[in-house]
Length: 294
Ligand SMILES: NC(=O)c1ccc[n+]([C@@H]2O[C@H](COP(=O)([O-])OP(=O)(O)OC[C@H]3O[C@@H](n4cnc5c(N)ncnc54)[C@H](OP(=O)(O)O)[C@@H]3O)[C@@H](O)[C@H]2O)c1
Image (tube, rainbow, N blue to C red; front, top):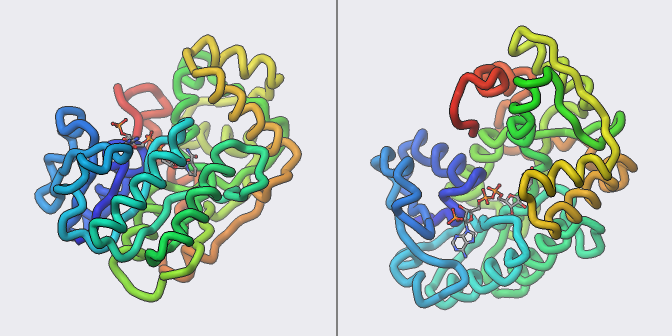
């Protein structure tokens, strides 16, 4: 049996949808079943409740599980949450963990979450369990967060100057995770995964314009203006600081995020979704026509 943690979140729910699409049985770990009603629509998904920081709540979730896809929220508790879970999984007899990290994962990264992912990867490698690291680049869904100003002002505002990024479709990542969890030969390997193109924000704006049929501009703003907007929107200070550092790294193109990594799509025979395809699929979200975005 396979268990996916963080199953109620952005990435985890995309992974669950792929298992459901494939008709493959899977357990979905959530903290609250009441908040996971959408997963109940899938007959091959068994919803299990548990808190990754409290091993005593995980007995049912981990029972009979051989492989795990390890995901939790990018927050200050991420290392503690995932390392506690790794210990509990090992004690329960899990054999193999696929760790969901990020493309800039490194112990010496200036970006908080890249350092945290690296610490967890290292902990997992030393746990005695079989491991695989899946390292996706920026999710394309990050641009759905810009829908409100795209709708109200025909523009989105980021402190990224003319830097290029290689956003990847979560549906492609889900196909990769499915393959890593249901086929053999992936133990002890790291899978970097990006979208098929390095795109500037102006190019992303152009793709959203084409998909929605209305003009969308990218406006480069100062880091101070971005930080102020995030704080005003209620983001906690630690997260605003972390995102500020990440944007700084991106402006310098210092962390390899402008480099396309096609190797995982090729190795696992996954069609690399372009941003244009993603934008067409989400045209209604970018037009503000749907109440909820992915
Ligand atoms: N955004 C990007 O562009 C990007 C790119 C590469 C990698 N990543 C990585 O992707 C990962 C997933 O991100 P996401 O956006 O999917 O996060 P998310 O939406 O916050 O989802 C994380 C899920 O983990 C669950 N969780 C957190 N603590 C838990 C605990 N103690 N016990 C059980 N469940 C717990 C949360 O449960 P609740 O629903 O109960 O809160 C939530 O459903 C992160 O590690 C991030 O660093 C993100």
